[in-house]
Amino acid sequence: MISWLKQQWARLRGAATPARTEKQKHGAAGESAAARFLANERGMTILARNWRSPRDRRDEIDIICRAREGALVFVEVKTYQTARLLNGYEAVNTRKKTVLKRAAGTYLRTLGPRWRDLSYRLDVVVVERTDDGRLIPHHFENVPLFSKGRHI
Image (cartoon, rainbow, N blue to C red; front, top):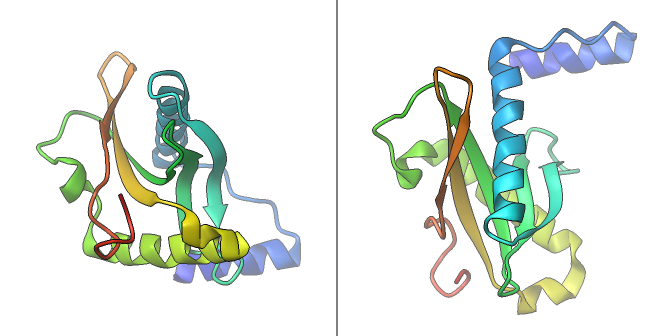
């Protein structure tokens, strides 16, 4: 929170944006790999990347896409240096799930009344970064986030 406020203050003053850290670069590469994987391997249509809520700019959804069957898919991407003993459910903690649920609700409201007819779900893509630099995505579909009857 404090770092976000500092960034906003610096931007208002016209200060130069700080260079990205290695962690941010790896995360961005992981998100790009996940988007390519979802589009090419899973046949999804990417609607938005790094979508931020206009109400609270801290609420972000990494990827929003439409699945072949028509469902709206909110995707959280996690990039790790090596394989972890976490599955898709454990890669996203409770706090992040709360933020995702709030952001997804805001996104759905921006669609207007037509969102009520949509099916939607949360997917998690864990991108493993190997020692030789390859990015290997692992896709976990329909991770529990929304109340029963609201997701597929």
